[in-house]
Amino acid sequence: MTFLDDFKPAHLTLTAESPAFWRVTFDNPPVNVIGPALMSDLKTLLTELESNDTVNVVLFDSADPDFFLAHYDLAADPALAEALPSATGYAAWVDITVRISKLAAVTISAIRGIARGAGSEFALATDMRFASLEKAVLGQMEVGFAAVAGGGAGGRLPALVGRGRAFEILLGGNDYDGALAEKYGYVNRAIPDEQFEAFVTDYARRVSGWNHQALGEIKSFINKYTRLPDAEFPLHSDAFWGAAGRPEFRTTASRLFDKGLQQRGPLEYHLGDDIAGIAQA
Image 1 (cartoon, rainbow, N blue to C red):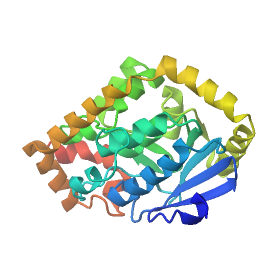
Image 2 (cartoon, rainbow, N blue to C red):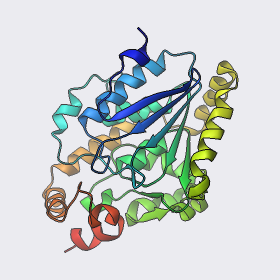
Image 3 (cartoon, rainbow, N blue to C red):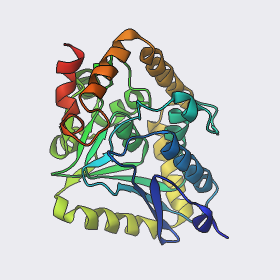
């Protein structure tokens, strides 16, 4: 039995487009939040990829055209995620994002729909981000909870968008559509939605055909000059979970759940716009 035969994830599907090209599709209704079960699936996948010398490209997409990864599951017990094995010894979400950023395989986020908070941080941890021009939405809304983005957005965004725009994104808490995300460098490029799936698949297939060692060496040099040391990222997680215990965070979260947080409705579609009015009320 191979890993592909044995792996039975609950909230994502793994498709081997070829031995060198794997597609991972998030599927966690109603809005693809990142909870303990999805994190467990990702950790199992990462363990395989860390020792796999055949897979050249992993493309992450979503079964839901409206939500890539909405955000962290704020209704889940954090202890369940923290009880999962951590290869790095870091907190659960930092363990995942750090490990994704260090894989030998090239990682690509195909963002059609909303990627906020930890969903945006997941995309930032991958090597490349392609966005649907009409459907992609990215943002870091943690400031609305009186919190720091806990998965490393503050460490990864400046290298992509610059210092000033990193402040703009993290301090404003707004949503960024595909066109503006491309202009800022938040994503590599935004592709018209009718061409989106074909573009990202063709690009992933092209890269997957190159020599595995060459891809790994290219990644190692780029990572050397652009990545922060791993030990920086637990500081972000500690700050987020410290904020999560404060009254301001709990009050805002309660108000948001009352208005439909993590349900398929207007709030999740417009959270970047609406959170200021709710948090500052």
